[in-house]
Length: 163
Image 1 (tube, helix red, strand yellow):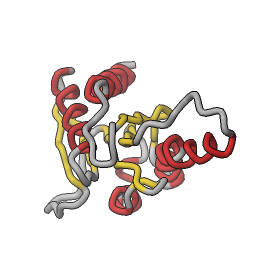
Image 2 (cartoon, one colour):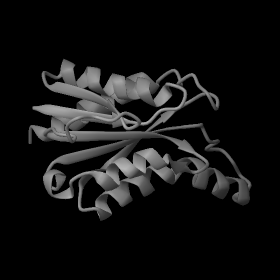
Image 3 (cartoon, helix red, strand yellow):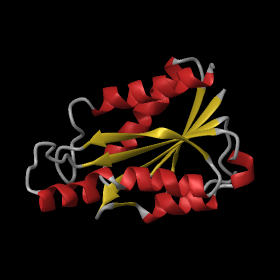
């Protein structure tokens, strides 16, 4: 099987997560193509499954990532599994101030699921779980466990394809 890993990245963090996903796909015995949504390609995106990723910026995934999903041939991808991943700044799970907690959820926890739901609204077969890989600071680096989380997410996804 062949997987496509498409991503947008500003400071290289989301690219590194995409690379880790592609590495795991290959380690699980499949082909993987890595594509930046910022580049032009001579052929449309093709594969048996798809991962799409974006950094979260100002409480949203990037315009380029959204545009990539909107331009996908929904008929060609309708029955192929799609997984969503995002890179996010950490939020404080122990926040007690309701206003700050709601703001953290809006800025950190909601963009990934909203992106997943947007892809589903296009008719894509998107898995429920969204990978949210942490970034330590605005420009990075990735959180210590982010690469390992990405590989585990990809491996679990690949396992579901065997069923």
